[in-house]
Length: 227
Ligand code: E4P
Image 1 (cartoon, rainbow, N blue to C red):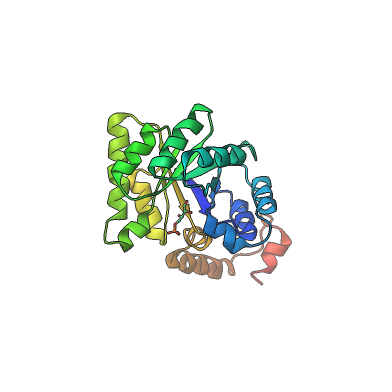
Image 2 (image 1 turned 120 degrees about the vertical axis):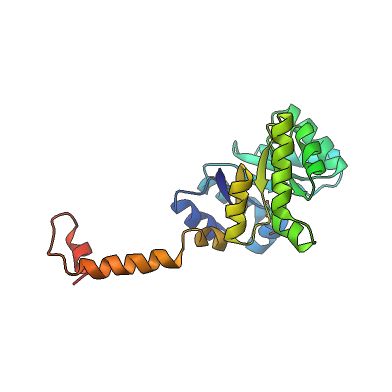
C-alpha cells in the first residue's frame, strides 16, 4: 500500500519525503490557498521535490472546462494526476481524459455507487472521504470495505485512495480494509512512527548501554552520547 501526503506545504513535503516512506502528494484548492504565493511556482516546486504521483484538482464545473484544465495539469509533469470531483460532468471529463491516457483521481466520493461509476469512467484513483463520512453520520471505513468488495468482485483496476484521514487509527484501518493508497496530513504521517512503548524500551536499552565498555562498533561521537 502506498502513502501520500495530503498538503501543498513545501516544507512538509520535503520533510515527509526525507523519511523514505512517502510515495506521492495530493493537493486540493484549499491546500493551495493555505500554502499561499504563486500557485504555478508552488506546483513547479512540488513536482521538483516529488518522484511520485501528484494530484492537482480541477475547478471547472462542466466537462469541457474540466478536460481543458486536466490537459493543462497533465502537461505540467509526467507525475501529474488530474483530480476531478465525482459529478456527472466530472465523470464525463474523466472518460475523455482516460482516452488520452491522462491519469485521474476522482475525489469527494461518499458512496460505493459513486466509486463504481468512477471506475466505469476509467478513473486511475478513487478518493473516498473517510473521516468526513463519519462526521456526516456514516461509516468511512465500511465505505472503503464496500468499494474494495465492488472493485474486486467486478475486476476494476481503479485504485482506492483513502482520503480525508484525521487519525493514525484510520490509516491502520484503511490498510486492513484493502486501500491501495492512503493520503494523510503531515502530523498524522509523522505520528505513525510513534508509540509510547517504543520510547520507553529505547530509553531502557540506552540506560543499560551505559554499563557496556567502549566498543569499536560505533563512532566516537555516538559513544560520547552515553558518557
Ligand atoms: C484528498 O485528496 C483530499 O485533499 C483530502 O483528503 C480532503 O479531506 P479533508 O478536507 O477532509 O481534509
